[in-house]
Length: 467
Image 1 (cartoon, rainbow, N blue to C red):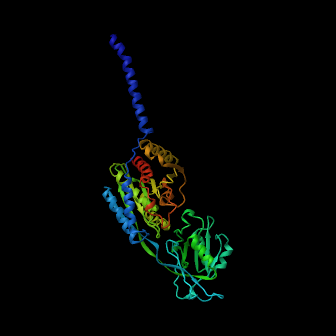
Image 2 (tube, rainbow, N blue to C red):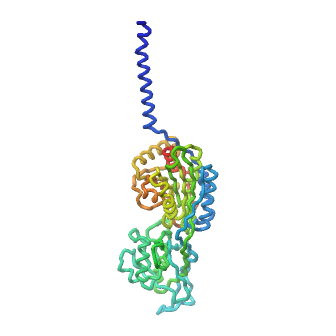
Image 3 (tube, one colour):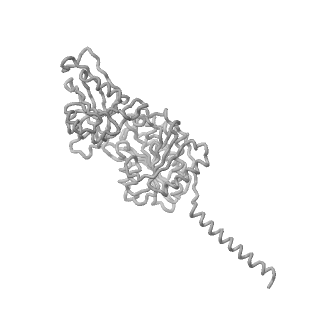
């Protein structure tokens, strides 16, 4: 046998073995270490979106301001070059505060049965000192005979105390133990109270215990909805009311309209190439409480989604990515629930993930953010992507990102209709918004840079899972 051929055989075998090993290793890399692309994000543009959206004031669900906000978001989706962008409208039972006047009227000693004509009333400032609660009833004052005395029942946990409020204003010193609004409302109404006051005694000490908006039971399930006013007051206002008894009585003139109104869901889409009937959703609510422009809660959310959409629009994906901003969240997740109800047959069982942004922002003092998911596999992937982001951009390491598992089976935000339908969900939250649901949730607290952190992690995760 030729000596060259003899030497060549083992060399050829070695080459074949090495080549085969390379192929095996290459395949193993492809399947075990799926590459992740960290998306770009223009946080300055996101900050500008926040400033544009708050210019109309509060975007109360069903209002003209909410419509203008939805139109703005639609225009940005269209500019981003998404395959589709449109608005869906849903009619839901909503409320509108027409008039809200509260004052203390001095009465004459010793019987306190007639107003004192020479002593001034104490007028309280709506929004700053008191805020109506969602689906409050009305009270139309006609004469001094409609002035009311006030009865303090403590924190509202002693059911026997409600009976003492018949014909009076039921004042509750709200603590962490106080029952939910809907429960308090029914108990006071059944006891014969003429109005309900929640005195904020536990939230926002640094802000002076400001009044906060919270929703109440939607009247859709009632044949005869309790028509009594329901509002929260600051701790100071509550103390002044209590200190004024019995020399003063409470005068109310409150008109809250409850009616069917249109709320909006803005939809943008990047259509998948090979699996267009499988979906990755982004969600955020674009409405605010009626008493605030809601710079952080939740104007930052739609601003983040606009810029994520702009970043992802340049990529081709296998699966469809949909971007939703919805109204009606603050009153009961109405927009996301209505959307899921309308599209359930189309998307149920086909949603790979829903990624929700609700106050996913931090001010320059808190500097912490959190992501919560109902999937352990997703949790690991998010930690991996977050680590890669901070490796690539070490300047962002000043932001502390925490990752947690949670079943996401409580309706805290717009992920819920999707996770209740069996979808994997991620809820992106922030910190540093003690002012939320008060009139102080304004641009003073906006930290635009922080908007990119969770947006880039979840945007990169969406691109990975959609591809």
